Image (cartoon, rainbow over all chains, first blue to last red; front, side):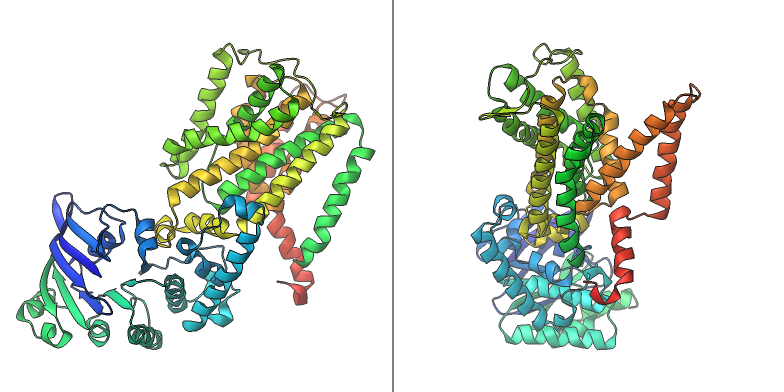
Length: 251
Length: 323
């Protein structure tokens, strides 16, 4: 599904990601972990297209995407949940989720300004699908509230609803557990488990090792921009290189 | 919504009735107010909803005015000139927006300001725009058998144009492209990852706001009968932003209320300053100092603008009926 092949990116002469190769198979939950500064966020941004790779190739669904703009990758079926609360201010919860369907619909300025039938039909379908996605993450009763007034845990759930309503082929989660407390974290883990059971392919970049170990089929460990381990959670957890990387940081 | 059901028909009735009761000098203010409101709706769409700044809306106003004037002076029907004005302004916005919209925040503000200065100096130098003297003897507006004779006709034309601009804006905001614009105002990264082509949408909203300004400019040139670089000073661009902010950014009615408040304030101060017995420095003091003080007061005490403040007041009185 996703193939990252020898990708590198440096900032001011220092490699943040160096020669990283990583594959995510169809229907798999792949976790990427690593200590602070390991290059997780850089790798994430290279895959989503918010950073350009200096070397290497990224393919998605068998197609080269490393020169495509972020919105084109999104339209191919990548949906993202960001770490920072990226809910759209000044819009309701439902409207926020409706934005997620942008790439799946087409009514433009003219159709909207003139309220053409096509636009009305689109709007009805977008709203219905957004409501279904809100229902799935348990935010239905908040639908008409301003999105920026939601607590952080629900903002993350909102982002998840926005990502899901586009019916992605690949869901990318950037540190989804950060800033969440016990119960919120448990809710999120259950949601991800439900999605995995439904056959969705997920790339989970996460600092919290326990969270990833529970959810991932396979874990890739980054340290200083390189892949130092790649395998099933039980195997990776006992890898001496991984232990050294985390202990070296005394994490 | 409740508020809208009462306010919209009321506003429409007042709009239609006013030209019948106002005298000619008051009607002139009424026309200029409507034109300013038309441009300000575009500014509110651009700044309030899409989060982009333009200190050059006066340039688009000017492009619209010159386009309509040149076409009409070359013997084309005025209706064609009026229709071409928003199209030319939008096309101009697309061309300058391509490089300018790579900038953000105050860089974008200064670049749009520079764009207007360049355009003004070009209009003052070129032959076909009539140089500093500008274009004169523009025929009155006419369409089919109708000819705009007096100021009343322009008042109706202006406010019909404003109604159209408000309707288009309302429809766009509540739609798929409108949601995309509001989304990219918060985060271009998250918007792009939802499949929104951010650059193209920023360009489109600049062009739409320019079209509104261009339409206002087209009406203006037929109304006054002449256009010159001096008709579109940089100050006018700043005034549109002031109107949008005072009325309430990100509300359509705020643009109209803001335009009305500032236009009437400026007119009122002007009349006050020219009353007999006023000292000779009165016009300067009143038009700058009092104007500035009112602005500071609004920003300090009503930071969201007039319309949101009025809405809050009304909804507090009827807590059961709020949205």
